[in-house]
Image 1 (cartoon, protein in one colour):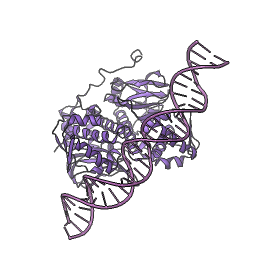
Image 2: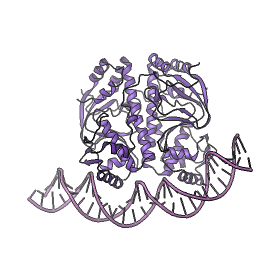
Image 3: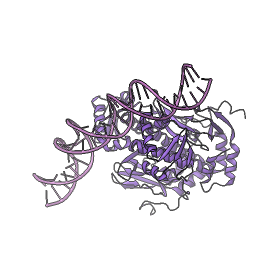
Image 4: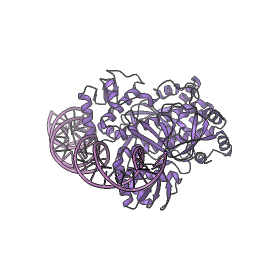
Length: 252
Length: 252
DNA sequence: CGAACAGTTGATCAGGATCAACTCGAGTGG
DNA sequence: CCACTCGAGTTGATCCTGATCAACTGTTCG
């Protein structure tokens, strides 16, 4: 059972084998969802967290008149409703492809966090990275051209699926339709289609049947003004060290 | 010293007087910033959290060529760089008006969280609400018209400044220029100006010299398709109760 | 008094939306 | 086995929201 989020947690230095074991034991067997099924309904307050074991999903908010904004894409191994631990779900989670989803009950998770404080910090940090991604999307939709936005999204997906190590020729599973891309990027389907064609005819990517081929990684990054820093993949900085204090701070 | 974030924390049920006292004691005396000064620089890793005691600020990301996206507005009492506790700052915080900013060192805060686990949960929840706001902005910039976006932002600011209770005739301090609004909403200054004029001529709001007057609250909400749910102001749901479990969940 | 900035206005332009039609599989059911 | 449907992708034509450019006003402030 792919539990990639455990490896994310591992990136949080202080988290040791014990914690990981403890979390792994909490995971309950998976349930299957068909493509297009809602894994988590908007508005509900779940009693458990959902781990995407296999398949892809997306988080979305749909307005009364049908306009939809996709908020993020979840890849296998992602914890896709961690916010439900403390807040009701202000958006839904929907399966992009057939999915296998495992659960961890909130009660169990809280108990584990009590036993292992470092676990809570690690999950918190996960939420912070999630928020960083929202911010980056906001920058894109607010201030980048359609062309850069699409390229940027593809960069992000590639980096997340390959855990930072992308290179020319990489082929990735990303089962979205152009309509999904449009709703993620605030564009119309028609325009998304045309920009995608441009990207293909420039030999930067190829995309067919839910597979993304990176033909020119450097070119794609340039097109998307992409800098992976916001994904905070790098080695974790130790808390409190090398901090910057305000000039007047250390004197009191 | 206005510490409104303490009242936010209070909304988290389990947090008692002890915790609040403990946090209050950690707050170090304030430093002043002029309007336009960077309170937190993009890229740095602070050794402390900043509490906006008085004045207004905004969080922003500025692209190499000068395009800027404002990510949120901070009102007096806000903790404006809580993410710095676990992540480096991928965006800056800038003073909108002259500000007074107090600090809490990360080390002190971590120690307090160790002593009072509920404190950590409360701050985590604060971050989650922050993320909910980012999502809502994303929906706006991606899927709402300029008119709705502007109205929506004004609604949000009003609700946050009045802590949920807004009514016709309310006058609020919101010292932004039209350029700030533009950069928050992904619009040009000229267009922002025109939409603002529309909103004024329709008798919905008045805005002058950093003061916002709500003339028709219902009208403003309608114009902005505003629903305050995403701000999660309501009474906190108790964790784990009234949860929704997947059909197959409780059987294992 | 002049600079600098915020706001405003008008004219023009363009990125991307919208509308509509058509192609091309992949099912699906008779 | 074929007709049918349905979803996804594609194309062309046209429209419109909002961008851009440029000038001008008013106010504050040194």
